[in-house]
Image (cartoon, rainbow over all chains, first blue to last red; front, top):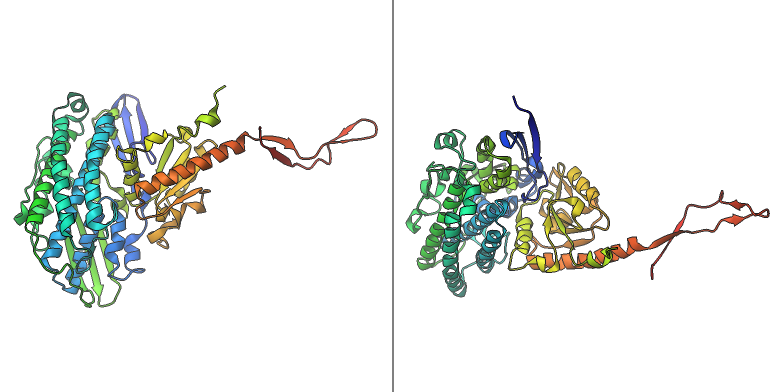
Length: 362
Length: 177
């Protein structure tokens, strides 16, 4: 047996946004074993949601679980409480929720692509991707009023209407963003030096991804057809707005990039359809019913399937709230993918998972 | 000799540490490094090494598991150093205040110079806070360049013997001209 070394990545590292710790065991340059240590950012939000906050405040609190997919968390919590209080929300509110979820997906996927480019050593592509991402941030600000924490979904609907000038602004800015995303697509697809760091690196097979319960772009890049938008129709009508599942077969970093970029096109199409077919009506249906019973809601966050479970007992405070974050499902696959790759590829592989540890640890 | 105190202000390197936040302020710091806000025009580069950095940007409330890492990273930074808290929860604990795994704001563990408000703080606010931090960095640079002298002069006794036995251990700081 060759000599083995243990190399830690994290908890504070230049290529990581958040504290996570991977302990990589290497033989020469090859990673033979990996160990993940993720729960640095555990805050106790689930406990606080059932002790400190009333059920109407819960969507705003769980938005602070994660800054990247805060609207997915807020919408899931609002939907699960609507199920408990048996409130039917207006169709316009559903469309506006989907609009913000898709805008959020654009900014999150572009951030992930930029991060992969940076960790692969392609600083110029990082800068270009981040420049194009600012369009989606401006749109989110004009729709919701804040750049990162939107607090858009409330129990019973949304808290801001879409003004006609903002809708026109979305159309003009997306028309500017689409050709830029096409240019980025070409670079990510054909650039030779990027392909050296991405093609065939960090690959996972379809069988292994299914066995380890991977979700989101990580699973779809391996060919596993798993997407909540394809499976649920009762809460948000995705399919009638032009949703289409993006699949790839290779399962490596390159395939994950391609899946994310192609999902951007789907997001553009859904946003166009929402703006063209936005129904008139109220934006919220506020009732005074108290939550009772238990319910589960699934939402497709940018990183995969997000599940919220809640139980109420006819009081102002929920009895239990449980969040299952997408990254939590992916941890098994994340550790497995490292094995057999070069140590120098580790930052790019970590970035291509798009890990969200504040979702996982809460 | 290099005139370090002159050039330190022109290229302060920043170290980013997430003490347990929601990533919201972190992606705004990343947006600061990107072309639209471009914090590099102040000479700032994001480094991963505490030993090369001058400004510590902290996001998020301190959790029970990151507090040791936070103090460790702070101790590894060389003087002069400035600490900037980004966001409400790094300043006071914010919405997470009182949760069972939260210790509170960053200032309970290390001295903080600049507080940036907002949830999440906007890139403009971060740039503003960092530029304020540059002034503090310059002040701290002047502080450690001061010469020090013993406060009391030794007593010369009658036989010419210098007596330092009753010398109180005090120093005075004088500004260099």
